[in-house]
Image (cartoon, rainbow, N blue to C red; front, top):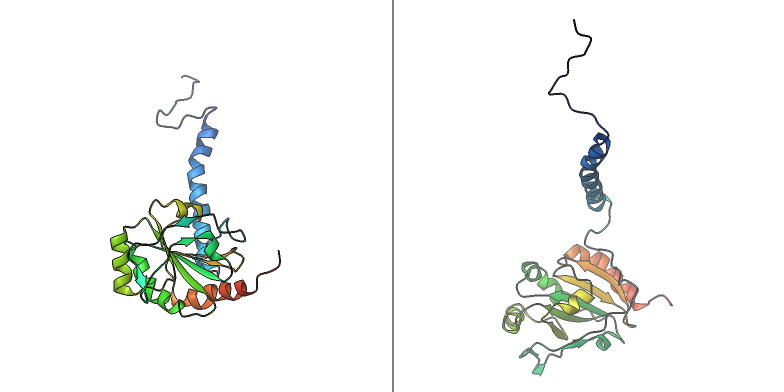
Amino acid sequence: MSDNPQVDPSAPVEGPTAGPRRRLVLIPLLVFLALAALLLVRLFGGGDPSAVPSALIGKPVPSFDLPPLPGLGQDGAAVPGLKAADLKGHVTVVNVWASWCAPCRIEHPLLLQLARDPRIRLVGINYKDTPENARRFLGQLGNPFAAVGQDLSGRTGIDWGVYGVPETFVVDASGIIRHKHVGPLTPQSLSTTVAAAIGAAQDPQPR
């Protein structure tokens, strides 16, 4: 009778690399759990999931100078383009939109409502669009914007930290970005977070 133990060929082989392999397998699981926990906090933490933190909050608007949307008129006058200097002297709400963006169409009635707010000037950045489609979009749904700048290349959107359209920014009279809303505006966000940001921007804290 042999003293040598029988080796089960189906048993896992333990060796010096078994530990590192287990750790490598666990990494994706840990990342997934962390992301799931973050999602649950965003959904049930009581905050506004559309109010995404931005590195630009509290900083001056990026330098930009966008041409007007050709052929866009309002009250018998051409609607001007948009540049950074236009965002000083009054509280401005900047909406980044495109005709190809379905959520932009959904939020548009709220922009028409927001444009009537005497506390703000509402302007638009038309993102990676064609002039014909953008002009047709506003012709069909109404133009809420006092100015529209064409961002054909998307470069200005990148400078503003735009993830995707629509996005809306509240800028105070000093040209400082005070609030960022990602995704389409809703009646709730317009009456809560955006309204609060506009109110706060009326009387910015001294810097």
